[in-house]
Image 1 (tube, helix red, strand yellow):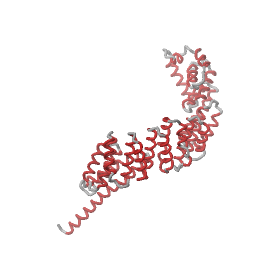
Image 2: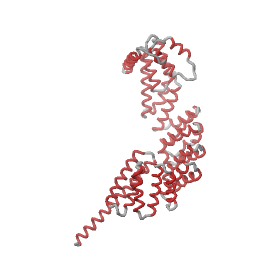
Image 3: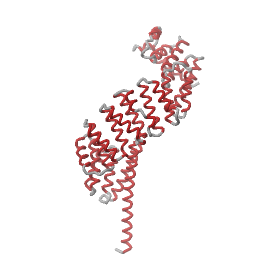
Image 4: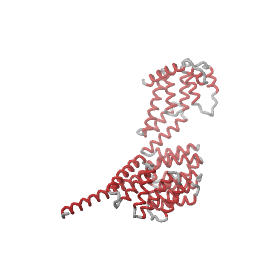
Length: 443
């Protein structure tokens, strides 16, 4: 071979090696980004990144299946497929990585993810064997943290609490990047084991991690689950201090509002409103969500049209928020329909449906249904309005007079249908009513 040809061959091999290395390097970076997205709860974005990992790692492996970085490519493929739920493909790649790798740390790290594959397949015992083997030799780092996290999950799920709690603590110590994941797992398992003290500890830890604000919705969901296990009042007390959590404005607002909802469920409406208003007086989406919640609470007890102006005033500062905008639009629609009702009583019926269906204002809906029935008592839809008024009535009030009033319409197709009997003319009445209401609403 000439010197020139040898030189060209050397350059070609060097460039090929660079392309191979770059493919693996880029796959590794994509995997790290995917892990960040997964831990933050951005599952769709994480899934796309894991697919990118598979594409890049597979490309690198195909270039040199016996090359220097083949084990790294297989290890990446296995982990990415595992995150996507492709258990069999993940297991095959990880097992092959352990066979071809000369690096002891890579082989031990692969055992951790093989253990996760076993857990996903339901074999916890074999998973523990693999994890214990890995932990006997792994140095501090992401793989060790994953091993402790997984072993803690297995032990706690099986009732072996002492070792399990220790493993979760150790996982966070080894790699702080997974402390939120470990905290959420601690909270889930504390609820599962009915341990409010552990739950308090988990909430306290999560509220102290700035990055946990990205998982606010998950924390709130777990708080609701805990409230079902114990009581809303108990969990509200576990969340004390949410106002000072270093979560960022939106995350802090959402968890504070979640606590306000728990206080409301516990019957402490004064504290719930105080907590919600503390959020509502701020700015941004969190404040708008709080105004929406306060308005919904007020609407539950609204029985007077004049009170709608106060509710409109609560909502207006957050009008750019989609939920607030929809509620404001419904308030405006109801206001317009009640004006129609002064001329055409069926407008009161249409307004009552808006109050019931769009505003959740059952007391106001009851009054509007009855207003229609009183304004035009001979209308064929009065029995439907009376039945609707009875349906939205508070359960703790005996509306005997309303039932007696319905008795005067016992031959109405609506009353007959409500009692489960044949109701000739029912469908024709419904079609005619739908047409009339549509005309009124479109004015």
